[in-house]
Amino acid sequence: KDIGKIWLYEQMILARAKKLVDDKNFGEAFEHLNFLFVNYPQTPGLQIMRQEFLFKSAEEMARQNRLAHTMAVLEELQKSFPNFQRERVRNLITTVSGQLIQSYFQKKDLSSARAMINRLAKDYKDDPLPVVEEWKGKFLDLANEYRVKALECRDRGDYLGARREAAKMLDIEPQIEGGKELLRDLLKEFPIIRVGVFQTADKPDTAALARSEEHTSELQSRVDISYAVFC
Figure (cartoon, rainbow, N blue to C red):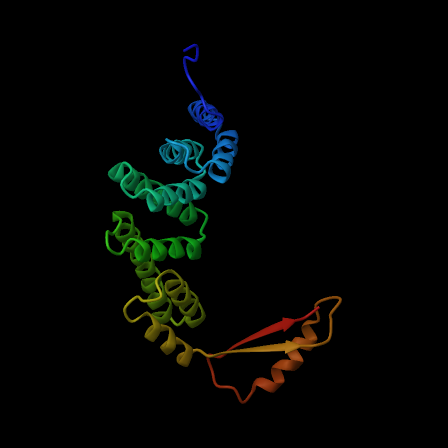
C-alpha cells in the first residue's frame, strides 16, 4: 500500500537519455541508449527514443554543416524506420545531399561528387531524388562546355589543348554522347611520346635535351615530345 510508483532501472536510464537528447548532448545520450540496447533491449519506448535521437542529432549536425555525417544518420533513420516522418526525412535527405554534392563541386572534387550522384541514383532508383537529375544536368552542361573548348582548340591547331579539354570532358561525364570518339580521334591526330631518362640531374641540362632531339627526325609532324627526368 505504501508503494506509490515502481521505476525500473532501465526506465531511469531511458529518461536520462531523453533529457540528454533534449539538451543536445548527443554523445552522452548515445552511451545511455547503447547501454540499454545491449543490456535491456526490450525496454518500452526504447525504439521510439532511438528514432528521436537519430532525427534530432541529424538536424543538429546539419546546422553545424557536418553534411556527410548528417547524410549517414538520416539514411540510417530511413532504413531502420522507413515510416518515421517519411516526407520530412526524405526532404532533408534531398537538401543535405544537394549541399554535399555542391561542396564537392566547389572544391573541384568532381570524382566524389559523381560518386555521390551515382550512389543516390542506385539507392533511390525506385523513388528517385530530384537532386540526382538536377546534378546530372549540371555535370552534362559542364562537360559540354569542355567539349566545345576541345573542338575550338582542334580547329585552331592546338591539339595538345584539345586533348586536355576532351579529357576533362570525359572526367566529368564519361557517357557524354560522342565524347570517347572525340578523344580517340584526337589521339590519332596528335599522338604523344614520353621519353624518360634514368640518370639523375643536379641542374637542368638543355644541351642534353637538344642532343636527344636528333633522334626524333623519323617521327611525323605534330607529335609532342615530353621529357621526364626521374630524380
